[in-house]
Length: 241
Image 1 (cartoon, helix red, strand yellow):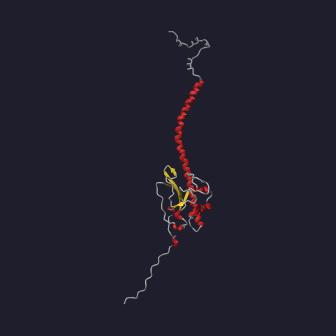
Image 2 (image 1 turned 45 degrees about the horizontal axis):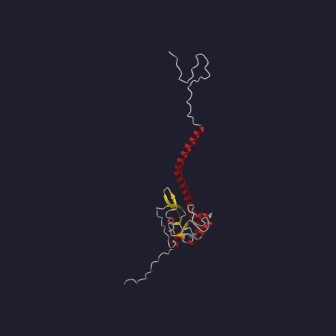
Image 3 (image 1 turned 60 degrees about the horizontal axis):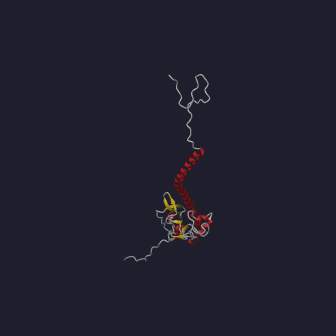
């Protein structure tokens, strides 16, 4: 039986018992390359990565930018709500110093200044009206004009009586009967749009635009000033005979 012959181009095995020749390889040589230079291969690889990046980056941006935008909007809404809370507490401190009367509509902002830390509490970070938004001549919040110099005792439902609210009237000491509340609402949340509102009891909340604001009662006189009606006196009648 003839010995096994290697394929063409494969060096013959060494003779049995003898040293292998210098050109002997136990495996077939690898096939020769296509002849493309290394720089061309690198260029093709980089071009492919660039094309993939051009496709993926816009997709990621379309997904992430709305998320980042909503997160910034939520942060501004929380900061605005904090401002409303500070103004509500400042109003309560004001009433303690002024015979339990609410501020006057003509200068309610000036009345708040001694009780707040800084003037930017009057400004919502969500809006930038024309003029000096960070100065003394503007505000993003309005005062319920129905509370003008009202005693606390005249507000039997303080948790349902609006004190401050966001407004489209950016003038100093803005006040009205809730007519300047922004529509559409100023803030957007996952649950829907709404505005920040504070109440006479000192709490502040995000109020959904779809829900009507509560209408707390305001008495014309404080309860302790009411006078009980006196029954009319009847003249004595002589006893019947």
